[in-house]
Image (tube, rainbow, N blue to C red; front, side):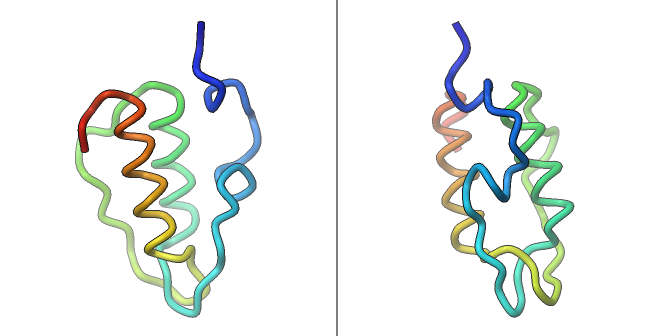
Length: 76
């Protein structure tokens, strides 16, 4: 049976409630990385998101990614 977070088709910013910060992580890059994690295809490398104006809150994104790695058993 799949995990609950894998059944929800909402975009990552809606699912996790990412806040917009004055300077934060590039939203498209974060969305793509989180979507890849949630579909079970672990990304080849650790994330290195660009810092942009009006991006996602960095601390919040880092916490979500850490949690997703932990849930996937990757021990990030």
